Length: 401
Ligand code: FEO
Image (cartoon, rainbow, N blue to C red; front, side, top):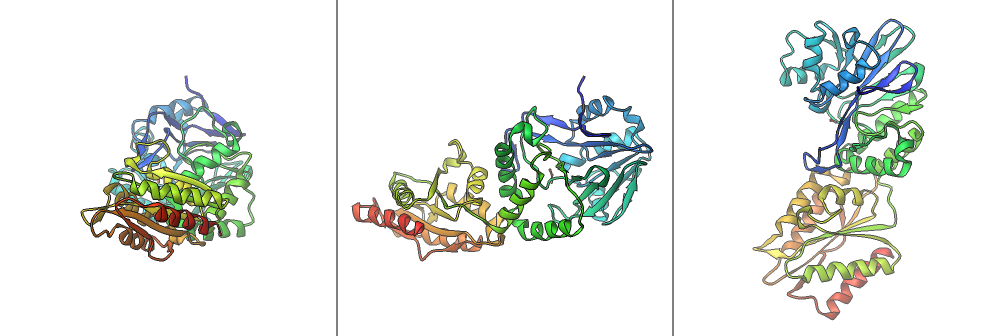
């Protein structure tokens, strides 16, 4: 039988592990977890969040290793996205009339996803509490972190914050805690999660972190809805969210491109050589539709998050940017890295065998994403000759300077 994992006295992880998920709306991942938590008070037992549809048995089995699932007195739905609310229909059938606490917007959203006519939905607002006897849950609305319905739940007695998606990581593992998976690996998975889901919300993250800080509450543990629980490094993930939202970067450049016959590739290599010789950390990503290890768009934006600059290259194909690069640019515009407090620097490059145009389009696209683009970029005809490769090398070197 599956077992729950204890976080504190009367507080348990009762989530589900999805070992096989590899693509989540365009984000590549090594599986994930749908974290649900059981809080057993002296008077009431509450389930916080559920799971993706089809994973209810895992949650129920883990609950059953602590208490009879039929004794659950209430459910908290921090977020309506289906990876956390998908278990609600089964729970509502199993526990007729069970109160489900959520925000006002969540009530509307749940009604669109499920037949909630018979559900006992209870609207809560920031500051509302739910007494469980010796424990009390406090709710904190968190609109647009990352959906309008989102909220955090705080357990004061154990100083545990349940922020749903915020501070999460997509990883399926046997480890439940940050100190078991390791600090670096935990932060690295959290960085990918932030880069692909949270960048456009960076200003709201900073506001919310200020608001939570202003409450003067202790946070000993952060228990998100995906990945490991921050037990030993709660302060580190809070600091990382602050830094990522501010756009704090390393002396690092990410070079992204695709190539038809190797000309744009030669330019990318020369840019990388220049940047490296200038002392920068360099990541080079050949797009190829993400078929190369570490070069999927979701990996590239993760590299970009802590880079000072992003250089994007493409040859011109039929007056357009190559489709692989165009797809990446579309993803980048959606993420809006310009919303990070500190802007990224951008540079466009490429080659053509006719009258070109891709470099201009890349520059315009980067500007729309809020990136500060340097000049008009650099476009060469046919193959870059020795002087042109030298110009690329010097452009890479100049970035470091
Ligand atoms: Fe917004 Fe993990 O769902």
